[in-house]
Image (cartoon, rainbow, N blue to C red; front, top):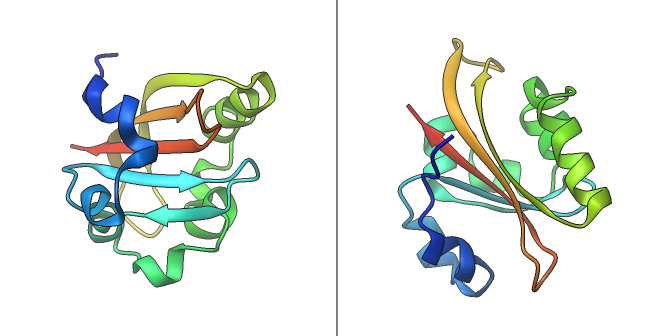
Length: 123
C-alpha cells in the first residue's frame, strides 16, 4: 500500500499541536496501548459522525468503532504494541453505524515517544 501520510508528518506527529492535527486532511486518532482514545481529530469526527467529546476517553476498538475489533485491525494493533513497533498500512471497510465504507488505515507507533497513532484515509 502507498503511504498517504507524508513522511514529514509521521516523523513529527508527536510534536504537532491539537490545531495542527485537526487541520490534517485525513483521520488521526491517538490511542494508548489498550486502545483508549487520547486524540480524535476533527476530520475523523466529521467523517465518522462521532463527536470528538464522545470519542475521546473511550476505547476505539470496542466503544467507538467495534467493527475494528477483529484479527485484521485489533490484531495488527495488538501485535504492534507487543513488538514495540508498528508501521502498517492496509485497506479496510468500516461498517459500524454506516453503510460499508472503504478506507485505508495506517497503524503507527512512534519510536521516540512510544505513542500509538491510527491514520485513516477516507475514500
